[in-house]
Image (cartoon, rainbow, N blue to C red; front, side, top):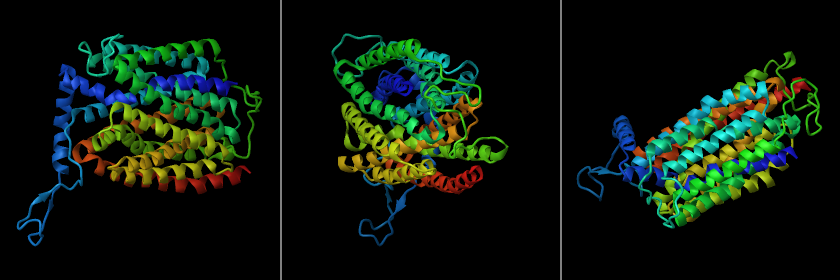
Length: 471
């Protein structure tokens, strides 16, 4: 029953969160078009900082004199079929994405510690209220509710970039619903069922990423971005009511206390506690943390630029990008429900995480070369497989390795590490994209995925050894 309620809460939260995705860059570009003073200052400052990097990375290829294309050396564009862009929305949007994640990085440990002290329900309600306030600021930033039927996202003349930044600040600081839901899943499931339970979180993500961007794109096209913000506010209000009226407290402090779903908080063969018989558990947990951070630097950075790549390469509209994100959500939902939940064995978390990372590597190579819709969809499907497997499996490992009495803090720190990766990734790969284009950014991302792959391979034997000690 609790898992079903969590699914509702997560879907409502993530539907609101994902509705902005297909219109994020158009919104940022709107402030550039309107020459909002704060936006202009931020863009100029960032451009001045990145200009030396762009100049240093602008390598040229010189054709030898014997080449039939030129009788004297001539510089050629080293990026095939693609120009190097100077779109302020790319790197300002990247900065906002990184700011959003940095605030989650700062708030996640606090939310986790609060959940250990006062329970899960109160922090969940506070985060839901914070999200509501964030979406309200977003709505006001776009000029407030609009009855206009204009489909143009640039129709608002009273928009405020400062309010939009405030909305992102509030949203980042209060993005604790997913983290707390993960903690609640760990409260009500036994260790061997943890990955199956966390699939609820993955399914919610997949459903939201299927429906949310599509709804956001349609609303933006028909009624303007004010309607998208109004939709997010309405969902946030409903979520606050659901959490307040329906969510019970699930925290149990005493070892062996009966869990709400009937499971006992006892040691299973798949549990690695932090007791004296499991002295390697803290080191293993740190290893899982490191894999999580490194993986998300690459994944989040290129996830952030995917819709921009689709728009630049194929000319996809906001509606088309909404459909693309919906496609990714459908594939991820199918993987979560039809594949991840059916996996068995003590090594399933490591095995699934490795499969997802390899899929991401292949997907990034495909996306780097994508100049037609079919190739873009193939790369996006591989991207979706990684989205459905890696983070949920690493989260399951972290919860299994954590002591029960500090579970909220452990998962808060784990999420904070993930947000560190999500903060670094968009800034780094948006800058690379701006300086050298999508071809180079995605190929470098594919090379970068090799690092967490090797780290995960090294993790497998250590977990197997620990399991033997526990047995």
